[in-house]
Amino acid sequence: MRYLTAGETHGPQLTAIIEGMPSNVSIDFEAVNQQLARRQKGHGRGRRMLIEQDTANIVGGVRHGQTTGAPIALEVINKDFKSWTAIMSVEPIEDGEAKRRVHRPRPGHADLTGGIKYNQKDLRNILERSSARETTMRVAVGAIARQLLAEFGIKLACQVIRIGDVVAGREAMPIDQLIEITEESPVRVTDKEAEAAMISAIDAAKSAGDTLGGIVEVIVEGVPAGLGSHVQWDRKLDGRIAQAVVSIQAFKGVEFGLGFEMAQRPGSKVHDPILYTEERGYHRASNNAGGFEGGMTNGEPIIVRGVMKPISTLYKPLPSVDIDTKEPFTAQVERSDTCAVPAAAVIMENVIAWEVAQAFMEKFGGDSLEEIRSNYEQYLNHVEGY
Image 1: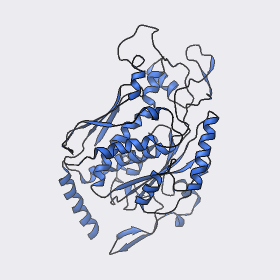
Image 2 (image 1 turned 120 degrees about the vertical axis):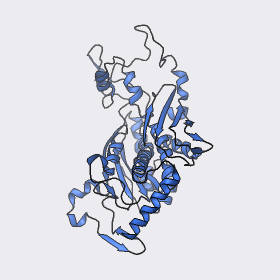
Image 3 (image 1 turned 90 degrees about the vertical axis):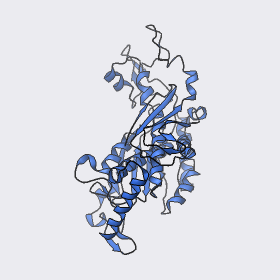
Image 4 (image 1 turned 90 degrees about the horizontal axis):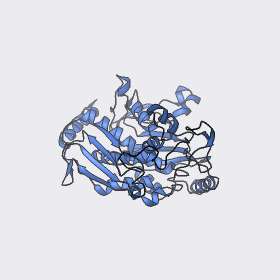
């Protein structure tokens, strides 16, 4: 499976095309739009979320509620485009007529480097595509992929671990309970004390014209052992998930299971003992590896954490340089969020859903859901008898 996205943050629409989705997968349209609504939630979001109520229109590849095996085409209309019609027009303009031109790049954003790379003197041509608005379509794509995974009992959940210097407490609980609690939290945590502290920290940053980043965690349950492979570097599923996570705008790091804490422990306190019972078959006494060994899923839940830097658009902007005059200037200000960490958790969840679904198709691939199910059940019999 593969997908591509297109569109700009203030353009008429965002578009995605998915290729390789098998036929006969039932598509819940409400569930797709629910994922888009989750992405727009969270304390610290900006005014853009008041304008857009994202809804995905499926314009190809689905008929009578089921996939046909043809490419799936999705579109999300940008309601804000009506205020940007002239600015974002595809029609040619006369020299010097560009409106809302950007020429003072923001530190930490793609503006300057993208302008140099693509030889653009209006940095709006860079920021319009590098904006995190692009993740709308990645969430829509993930929402389709997770419906394939749900056919085989695979569930995903996410939670915020940290915002700024506030760390949320965590406790072990069933994944459905985790989903229920975090969906009700404006900062997507289970710790009510940390929730209040995070909200206060976000409000303080907003008053100061600053921004906050954080750490988010995604859990995937029900994944069979054997997705991914150890035989080539680009077939390792944990490596592909890591690449997908750091491809999300503003993400700068990723870890699995114990992650960086492994550096502080001896091997006897890191590796997960292997057990066997007739009821569960092979399993691990712990899950420090985060569900992966040798680039392959080992049957334990996948646990991934990603770190998101503070958003680079500051309402009290940092020093920059005007690319026209080369003189010092303050960076240009574009409408933005104070903190998008809770929304980023949803984005990461759906990005990972795609990677797991893609690996699932590589392992059990077929052209129809029925063919995949047959392959899957045959493999489970093999695992049980191994």
